Image: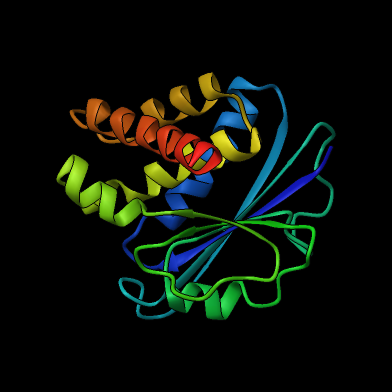
Length: 179
């Protein structure tokens, strides 16, 4: 089954890394096919950034995301540029700390930046919190696959912090489901 995911935020939030990690989890640990693409403005840090991943059980012959099934939006500008034209059947995870608009589709609010700052002391892991939330909410890849892909991808010495961030994302989705 083909799943198209679009990540968006601003440069410096790890939007591209998040997409790479999901693609890696799908290919290396869940035995699927994946293609990842990215777009970012000339400002790089601070400018709008977008990355997309297609995950499929079959080889991906057309690598362009045309109609995302899942959105992960981490900034208001990212929402305005890449999340406004969402189709009704999609699911959107938004970082409720930084995104104030809400889509017309199913929306899951995750206070990733606030939790990264307050619970973990590092804003930089908000993207990993969103990855945990993405996996917990959608099952797009397995919990085991995302954990292994995160450990493969983060800088040496930050593994424990990033695993805590991933688990925080899992917890936040559980709170939304039962809250």
